[in-house]
Structure formats: C-alpha cells, structure tokens
Image (cartoon, rainbow, N blue to C red; front, side, top):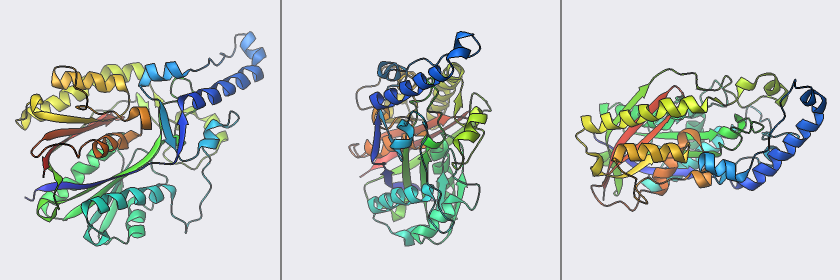
Length: 373
C-alpha cells in the first residue's frame, strides 16, 4: 500500500462580486414588481405578498457578506434574477471545464508538476453542466493529460468523496496521482427570487492534486485517513442537474432549483456530522485535542460553530476553524477546499487537521491530514 500526499491546491475565484447590499436592493425591487403585478390577488388573499430581504437578515442567518459569481448583471436584474450563460457550441470548452482547468493549473503549479505527471482526473461537483461526455474527460483533454477521467456527484460532499476515491486508487497502486476538481456554478441552480435562500450560494472552482508520497515535493499534507457516509434524505434537493434551461422552464418547476427544508437540515445534519467526525477520530486513535485545524464545509456559520464546538468540546480558538463564508458564501463542495487552501500553509511539521464536508444525501466525508515539512 502506498502512502498518499496532497501536494497542491487551486482556487479559481470569479472576478465579479455581489455584496449583500447589492443583492438585497435587487431582490427588494423584484419583490415590489411582483407585489404590484399581483396586487389584486394579494388583496383577495389568493396570493402571498413577497416580503423584503435585508443585509442584517442575511448576515444573521448565514454569516455571508458577499459572493463571487460568473454573471452579476443577470442576477441583479429585478426582471430576470438569474445569471445569463451564453450558449456555447460543441467545439467550445464548457463553462465548468473552463473554470476547472484554471483551478487545476494552480494545483499543479503548487505541486511543481505538469500534466505529464497526472494519471487521473475526477470532476466532483454538486451539479454537472451536462450528463455526458464527462466534464472530467473534457478537462483531461484541455490539459493534455493522459490516463482517464470521470465525473462524480455527492452534492456538497463531492470534494471529500473525490479525495477518498483518488486516495484509494493511489494507495492500491492503480495510479500514481490524480487531480480532484470541483467547479461549482451554483448561481445557475439558486432561486434568487426566494427570500429564504436567495443569498446562500456563490461560484468558484477548486482543485486538489494528490500523489504517492514518495513523489511529493515538500512541504505537503499526508493523507492519514478518509471516511465517507451517506443517509438518504429529501430535505436538500435539486431535481434538475443541468445549467442550460430557460427562466420559463424554472417558473414551471420551482423544484428544478435548490430546495431546502432548513429547520430539518439543521436538526438532522449537525448530529450526523459531529458523530461522524468523532467516530473517525476515535477509530484512528486521534484525540480532538490533537487537531490543530478544522476545515469544514462552508454552508452556514452557525452550523460550523456548532460542529467545531461539538468536536473540540469547546469553542474553537481564532484560526482553528477558518471560515471563508463571509467572502465566498456557500460554494457547495468547494467550500472546505477553499478553507483548506487558504488556511493551511502556516501549520507546523506533524500538525494534524481535518477536512470535512457535508450536505444533501445526506452525505458527509472527512479527511485526516498531517503536515509534512
């Protein structure tokens, strides 16, 4: 069995940013238009009026202050409230592959490797732009990587499940290295006109390069252990997996976008994740006090605070459990990787940390890593 190392990470961040204030202004303008157009039905009690949102409400509910998106104008148009993604011809790169390649190149540069050093590409994300051919194979082609690629979807846990899959293949000897890439275009699946969730998501792409430890250039993170678990629930769902659809189609099918029963998710997911992490640590002989850093899924600040306190048995110290929510919002599977990529280089030799993501499914994946310098 070969030992596995994470030697490179990459984060592609879209240039366009939507602040809470900008988002609220657009949403409230939409709500006013809706209420005016439906005034008679609202007065008759047959239609419910749209309530205004507020920046204070968003921060209190999530901890989010802004989000990066690939198309700001479409989202902030009160008559549209949905990003505009121009149709691409079949001989043009897909949008997911385009941003995924940028994150992959960063990860390879950090690892000091080239496409010739990659044996496999796993594209792990919450929503795929198309069913086939696989986005991973397209990324493989764009980077001129030999070997193979495939897509996988475990919603917000896709990145950690992808890391376990790559780790297992490297351990067994079937490959020497792999890129796990997470292009998350969540703006295309969010209902920006729903006050309860219009602020949640942002766009990003992340990548992790894993290889046999013997091939690694220091410093890096040794993958000590991985664990995944799923338990079926319909409380978080999206009944349409493709980005190409019209506003008219979505008006007919609200469930084609992100749907969540937030109260049930909080009640059911938090104990599930806390118990999963505790069990993983116990089975590996790791004490919670041994962990120097927790890189958690970036869904909601209150959720992360709860899990951190439950795992550590105390409130996390500043820096022990970094949040990137305030800057990126929820980026589905990419969130824990952003936190890891941006808050890991300061750790000392032999320091232990844990990457954990969780979400629809329900699903939860955890990766125990050790710093090697």
